Each structure stands twice: as structure tokens, then as C-alpha cells.
Length: 264
Image (cartoon, rainbow, N blue to C red; front, side):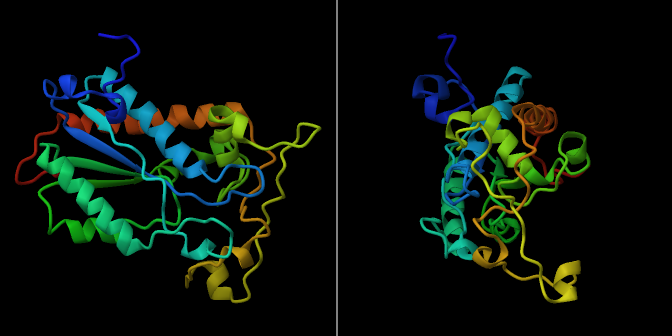
């Protein structure tokens, strides 16, 4: 076999391999196309989802997991960023239809364990899981990868993250540095990522929530301080994700689907 062949990536695989090798788990990354402060590319969520998916599926494959990474959906829900140019919106109902059709493609191919690897905070797929639970023979698992590191976040980063801050900028510096804009002196071409305070106490404390209009919340769409970012922090983030999600994929691949799956 060609040493550069990566059978855990569907887009690079061929029918000759797939007809002889049954996958157990399909991973569907879900990204977005939107501004990320002044310095990160519009495709940041797309690149993150794709690269994290490639790394965790590779780790799972080499550990014996029968996993396949589907091509990343590059668009997400952008209703709160609609005032920014070329924030490419798909309404939640539209995304639900797309995901439903792709899930059924997996199920028809004999893959009944599907992981939604979400890379965009504006996407909310828990209702999708609830709706599809009664409509498909597949078993869906939702991973917002940025939420699965909470207990270790401040072991790596100094500042909290909302959008295009220290964490995402560190990831960009490590995995797509040629797309991270810098000034002539080498500093990031980014603002400070400050957030506009909310007037109402209940909103500030999180007792009540809203869909935040980002042209009012931020100056240039960035929410979170990016200037403490380093490529080394981005690499540590990936290592943690591979450690946790790669193992999950291996475990999921080996589990038998019975009437109590995934419970004991």
C-alpha cells in the first residue's frame, strides 16, 4: 500500500479499499465561514474541524479503530454575525436537513455510529440529536471539541476564549501560520478582542441568555485576547484533543450495538 495513503480520510480513499474494509465510526466535522477578528482567516472553524478530525482519526486508526473522517461542512449558523460581510449563514433548520441526509448515507453504508465534530460555537446540534433519535437507525454523538478541554484549559492558556482569542490564534499559528495576518514588526494584526458590557445584571450573570449580535458585542468580531497566543500552545491543545477524542473513537469503534447501547 502507498505509504502516503490515509484510509481514515474518506476524500482520499478509493472504492477498492472501502469495499474490502468496513468502517464502524464516521466523523463529520462541522465548521463555519465567518470573520475571526482582523488576523485569522474566515475559514478558521473549517480548518480547525478538518485538522482536528484528521489527527484524532489517524490516532484511532493506528490504535485499531475502524474510523473514517467525512469532508467538513464549511458553513454554519451565522445569524448573530449577519452584519459582518460574507459571514455565510445556513439556518439551523437547513443544517438539520443536511446532517440528516448525510447520517442516512452513513447508515445505508453500514455505519451506525456517527460523531458530529462541531467546530463552530454558533452551531447548536443538541436539538438535531433529539429529532434524529426517532428518525434514524444511526447513533449520533455530538462533540463540541472546544468544550471537552475545560478542566485543562488554563493548564495551556492564560486568557479565556470566546472567538478568535488566545486559543484559536494559537491553533492557527501552529497549523495554518501562513494565513495568520501580522504587522510589519511581526505582531498580530488583531485588536484586543474586548467585549462590550451588557446593561442587565441577569444577562451578565448568565441567568438569562440572548442570541448575541456580534457587531454590538465586539469591535471586529474578535472576542478574547489573541496576543498571548503561541504555536506551542496550539500544539499542546492538539495533543490533548488527540489523547481524549482519539481514545473515544477507538472505544466507540469496538463497542457492539445492542438494545442498551451505549449504556451498561
